[in-house]
Image (tube, rainbow, N blue to C red):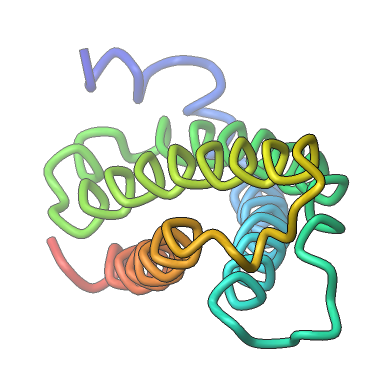
Length: 155
């Protein structure tokens, strides 16, 4: 299956085009900056930093982060097609994907708890479980970034 993926027209375009790989990599990095930047700022706020920021303000920014994730997933999938066999056996890549999945699940949980706090008219700062989840999310996203960088160096 991985050989077939690498032989698809999109994989060939990514592999052979002078501009495809760099363009997709740029889209991937911009998506990463949006997703991780917004989620980490939100998580830092929920962990107790930047007390002047209203944690509920991140609810509207969550849509932007999910849009960034969409672009990141599409560009990542296209990049994957060009070296599917290599990536599928790369421990750092597999760890990165697992951490991203956990990070997105935590993002959904955090958003749900923020919405619940908003509906109940209470401060999100009062939710100690939310603080713990935000700290876990910070660690997960940091690990995903580190694993992503290690993909190029670990076989």
